[in-house]
Length: 121
Image 1 (tube, rainbow, N blue to C red):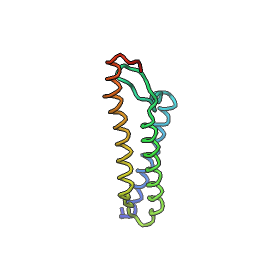
Image 2: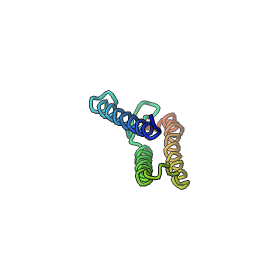
Image 3: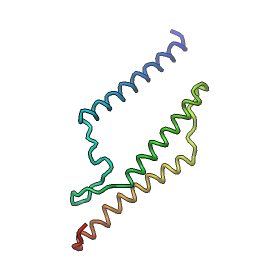
Image 4: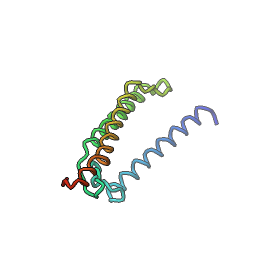
């Protein structure tokens, strides 16, 4: 078996694996085995739900970054090299995660203090 045949076989296996993975996840979401209820909601310590804009921005930025990188990969597919992720993208993605974690910490720490003081939330 030549090197070109091995490379082709690996490429086919990767595409089959990714296709089956996407199909499996889509099937489980449709059948309810993967629960997406309250996906964009956080949970307060008392069990209450709240809409989390931090989750929305994190999800949108992560998906956007993945789409831009996928576009770079498709554009450079003939070179045979994986394109580098720009440093600015990594900084922005880290900032997005920091916003999410700050919001989560705020809800965990400060919202519980107001409940202890008797404030209704």
